[in-house]
Image 1 (cartoon, rainbow, N blue to C red):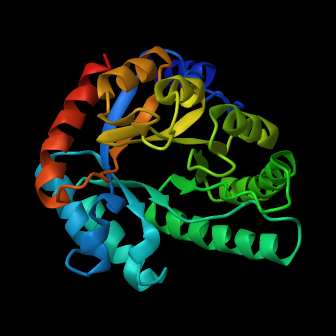
Image 2: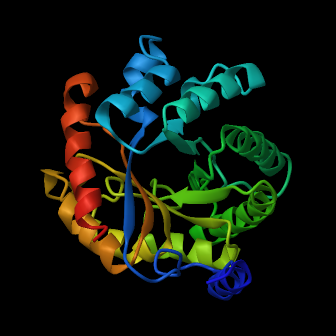
Length: 290
């Protein structure tokens, strides 16, 4: 095949930007990659006993592919902080593919919503500088005296504005199932569909639903643009070991292509528990990418 024929073939097979569901849009087999959420080491990061540079080194030592950097302990978003971190990750073959931020999008149009939008823009710019293609965002809590439907409309409008800006920087926003307005899978799907943007999907957290856990996970898997897995789940019957094989099977059926990031929140020390869990995660990624 000559160069001209190759270019024609590539052009014909190029995937257009489509609306979500996202996981199965490309078809074919699933492609899962292993990652770690910085939040897993929140105690050490907050106490400054660990740095984000240390997380890059940990990724190398454990053989995972990427990092989802929870930004709560970033000293700032200056080039002096972001670029050396990006350089270290690149030189070590570790992808900083995502950052996770706090947002509350249940804001009526006005000053509060404008302030939230400004904050999202700041983090989109930071993600772009780091080379991260994804940002985890929260929907927020329904204010007292406000109906869930009205608050969902506010989230839709703010996410639309945020998606327009994020898309201009090549960054996807993942709305997490994180209680509040995003407590139920059906509401999350409703919001994402109404936003109707190729730059917005779902950041699926397998440990955040508190009832009908795996049923709700399955509902939002087709809309997932990032997946965070917990070591445990909690439901109406208590605390249980998370079934990663069950989640992996769902992702495989949906042809999910992307990261599975361990977000460790169990009681035992992360320093001892995270490395073996990452070994398990790598095996799950390999098994369900087939």
